[in-house]
Image (cartoon, rainbow, N blue to C red; front, side):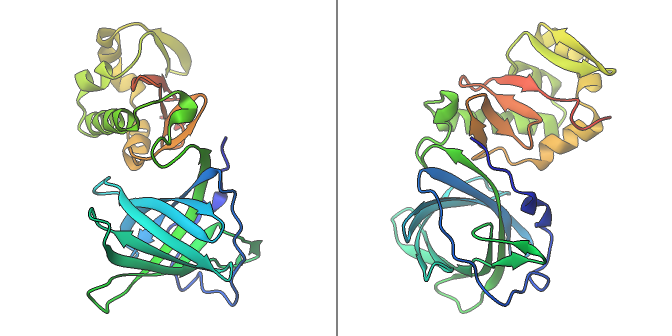
Length: 257
């Protein structure tokens, strides 16, 4: 199950441009994971997953440069405001998100798709602006978000995705090839071709992993990814992982050359 939002394209919009005169009433399906992407302080890229249960909210978020889950627990008040307490490993509240749901973005009607507000550590008065935009929603739980793809160990998928991502980033062809399930089909010179082994993939590596394709992969976040019955998706579908943690599909024709 996937619910994509074109609001993800507005991640670079400043809070000044997002100023609103009213807030939306947010009502969410509590059987889904709601995934948001955005920034803290307009420079720290983050991704957040929330589970709504009436006025109660639980979730996690992580920084793109750390890829480590931070626990969240909070509530919605008046249907329009959201407070999320950030918990440390001992369950102590150490920081807080204080936000609201704008009811529009220009002429576009909103409900729960955008969260704007502030973040601060509880031991300091300094606040940082936050902007979060809904990216997608998926079946699953916070403890087993990849279950829709038959995955029992989320950590294996996140670990392999990160290792694969790092290998692509650093041009480690042999490591990239070791994470792929064979045979696999890729696009080479505009035609689909079957690749049967790591040796065959490394021999055609530059033709498969074009500069644009590598850029699309390294711009993605290899953690808490989208999932459906087809597998676990890195980025916007450039790479799909199977339940065994292997890459089952390389969609290298999505980005052109």
